[in-house]
Length: 251
Image 1 (cartoon, rainbow, N blue to C red):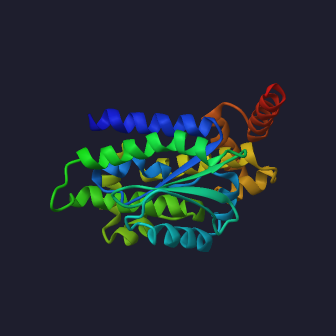
Image 2: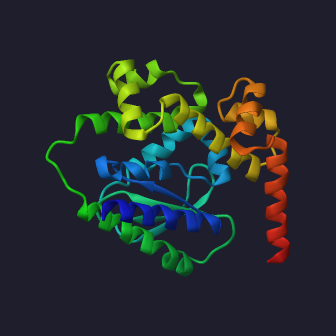
């Protein structure tokens, strides 16, 4: 039941993002909420560029942490990155944050986003609540949070272990056990995903894209990107931007 609900939540978020509605989830990611941690990053292109500065990311985190009390309803605001966003508060604490690529009225946003909030609240309701969180899961949770916030800064396994207050061998073993990939693979996937978003939604140079995504060596980035997608970064950008312009013309 929990796995099915998690899959439904992920599918619904992907559906919203396909319709240019950017979603991020902000709550305490305990053991059963951990699979939603990938959506803790807001993928609005302007947010992604601003948050390549770690201080800006810290400000965003503090803002959302201050909202983890049990507020209700929805509010619209301009975030520190200058993006208008709608914040939907979850009944158990935390929020779902929404921004859009095109103007969307609040009534339509509520119709689209409220089902997502209800699914997340139901997930929290049905998940077991042990008195003590499983230590291994909590360590992996901390590692994932740290990596998601710092993957473009060329962090090392030692940096991650220090943040989790454990040994490098322990965090590497636990990460592979619970995530199914090595830390190195996970970081590379995040970097490539971030690079794809920047190629698709910005006009900065491809060298700058590589640097912002955390690839200090452009040639290595180009090789990894082609291995992942089958095409060069320049062709990927051309294909995606052509697709967007075609969609606009057909609208």
